[in-house]
Image 1 (cartoon, rainbow, N blue to C red):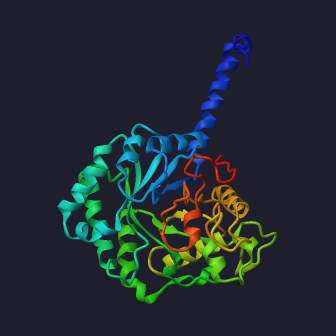
Image 2 (cartoon, one colour; image 1 turned 90 degrees about the horizontal axis):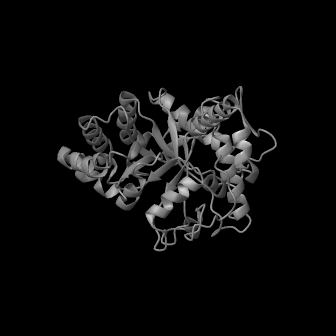
Image 3 (tube, rainbow, N blue to C red; image 1 turned 120 degrees about the horizontal axis):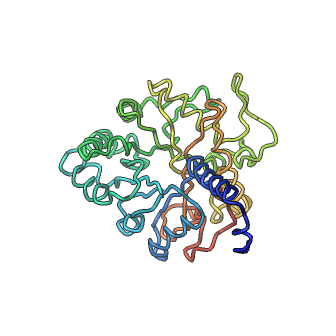
Length: 346
């Protein structure tokens, strides 16, 4: 639009347009439920400042960092991107046994970046509930919470940990969801902590893995494209696997005195290569993540109307990831910052 056209508008009309623009910006910000995980297990990624610019370019307003990436934190200064910051798994034992260590971690990685919008601290990621690190998670969460409170940030930052659906003993139908009994010594103190601090539980959820492990599930049900609801659970109908898994975790929480908790989906995604050529395609990854972005605005059958805060995994393909070949191909972008496939975050 030319400058002369803008000048010709009456002041009142210009004011109305500006007001509408501000309103739309506000709605976009408050309505956005999607973040993207910024994994860095690669040797060819762009500099952190360019990564933050890419988040801004695509209007991605939330980020998950798996540890104190100081280049990223420096680049995030003054931005409006909300951050989930991870406490490294290898630090759990030290922090669980020493309040000084927890205080130092919070000072160095949170307080020193007081112009970064931290939202959650994730104390550990996918810790094996029966493994050697399991006893450290609950105490480490307590220590980090103490440090956050001492720093005067308890009203701004919630402390949690990220688990994954292997914690479930039952998940089908979703209302029967329950936790594995041998995991309860690990989970119960965490649930009690989260309830006491009104913090959410972070859950990494991948319908992709459920699909490849059980071909009784249809691909359409996993990709949000099922034309009907193949799962009936009492009065509730499930048209996609994402909702079914999430509501199974909610059912399990209710049975473990965690019914008041909110779940944040701290990882979800679909690989674009590296596996079954009929399944791990760019098109399926595009379909899954595009539908995920739309779907999480509206809640699940068990929690209708409650938007689901969700983090897509991951920003980049990461060439040094271990495990199955698909692990290297969950990225939305190539390291050269070109999209792996077109996707709209709005």
